[in-house]
Image (tube, rainbow, N blue to C red; front, side):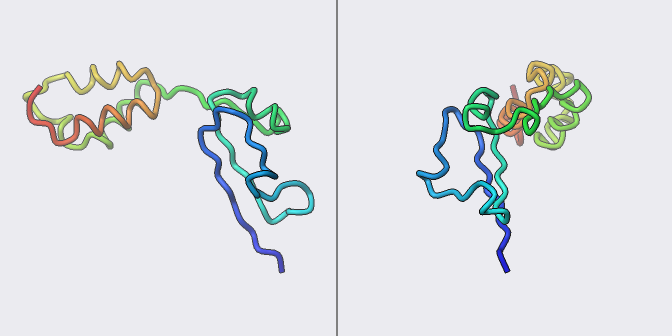
Length: 113
């Protein structure tokens, strides 16, 4: 029985030759699934990923951004010393999840501005 495996290649900036790095692909390796992410869809297309197998992740809504910011920053968002600063900072993240995580973690456990 063939084992199943998933390989995640995150944040590809340039073409990666899967054969050279030893990642099995193609019909002869049905037990291997690949998940690849890139900010540049063209990188994936040049790696022969069919266009209908790709999709663009949309920005988060303001509400989703705020909820994620609250979750990541913790109790600092409720601190009366900050008033509405955490919400303003979350809005500056412009719906970008990575930015929300980085900024919210930096604010976590802060007690002054």
